[in-house]
Image (cartoon, rainbow, N blue to C red; front, side, top):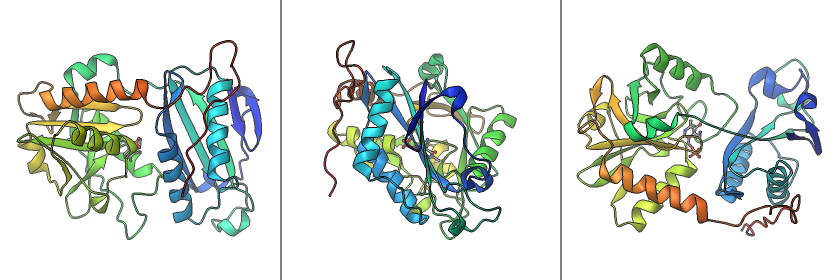
Length: 306
Ligand code: PMP
């Protein structure tokens, strides 16, 4: 495994960061999780745009331009001969003094890991996951806007603990008004009367890349889809429900707060969208490396950004 840290490619055992890095000390930084399917990096530009937006929102200047970052990511996939995998791209505030002031951190650090991911066992995609409402609330946009994909995942981790304690696979975070925001690391969708509904970023949802893809696939398939304010009531009366995320992809929800959703089996729209998603990820974009001959030569060239 070759890991990128601030311009150098190092072996896993040598991939170390400073104990004075504010990413470690304070969770001060941003990150992305990105998938590789059949040597193709899925929606890299969208992930990078979100990363740079998140960084901008916390006044963190990523020290390489977005196009160069795209090339680094592609190089990481090629160097690691990654066919199907998961990329973790992290930008921390960097090394500084023992105080929270980011002014003491002159240079943000960039870390890139290319590895495998298996969020859920395969069988669960056939039967769906169990989800509970977490007592842990989504953070208010008045504190930290939930659209910022930052290294601060403590509330999500607390909600994940709530899920485990409740014997569930996942937990839903409500915002402080009681509307559904999202799951611990995934967006949430329900299907009602043939229409799909998902909470808006204003209600505390991350602008998930997979969420956007699913909304697009629904539109392409002629399935009505829109953002909506949802409460626990909407989940209880939903015909189908599923969650989406880079790691989980599209995962059906079978049970919510101890009650079956719909008929308790994976519904037709969930199945249709999951199939469409699986097809899309295998064909979209160009492979970034090629077998023997082209190994180590990233083929990816990002589309120019406006
Ligand atoms: N919400 C949260 C809190 C997340 O961390 C993620 C990413 N794992 C998502 C939603 C899903 O976003 P994406 O589809 O971009 O992975």
